[in-house]
Image 1 (cartoon, rainbow, N blue to C red):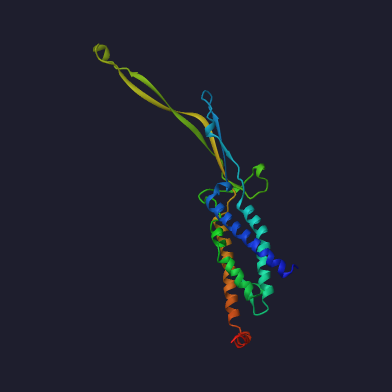
Image 2 (cartoon, helix red, strand yellow):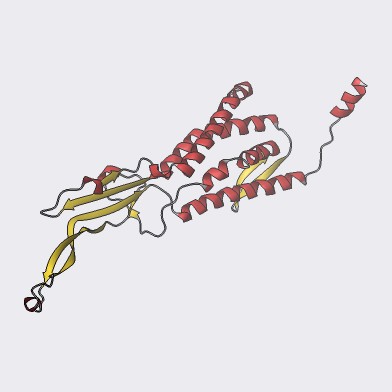
Length: 254
């Protein structure tokens, strides 16, 4: 176990790192959702038509939400344990049972519970509320692409269709009356025909969560918060312990 002085020395650095991490993840989940999305578009021109590279696209999923959350967890456990260990060391008074979703986590000091509550009252829930989610209007399945390995990436079915163009030609209408009217101008009509110029495919990829997964994470967060509130209420119902420090201070000074 580290000494209390060591924990106090680490606290400021860890608090700054945790705050910066929350800001970074909140911004990433809210404004940079493209890193969790990918696409693969192909195009094969039909014989006799020019190739069009602009119709092709490939963007790989850079990261998944589960990878980001695992990194967040791995890099914040030390912060939580440090600040809560400081509070536990400072407290030798009332403890209260913390029960979350019907399961007892143990007995914790009021200072520990208050400290965790203050962290949860900050930006953390806002960050979780911005966890990117997949488009629910599309069917997603676990990807079978080798270049994603066993990462938590999902794909849509391959959509395919033809790129088309319109060919226009002018034809003279055969009018039997023209031969009887030499000065009459021939009648021309424009005929338009749509033709296939290339086969296109489109497939989307996502490293995002489902709406249900995000809802479950937020539910767990609220369950912990509710448990803390109930534990603090139980602690507040305990008999107060009288301190004579105030009396000694006043009598000595005055």
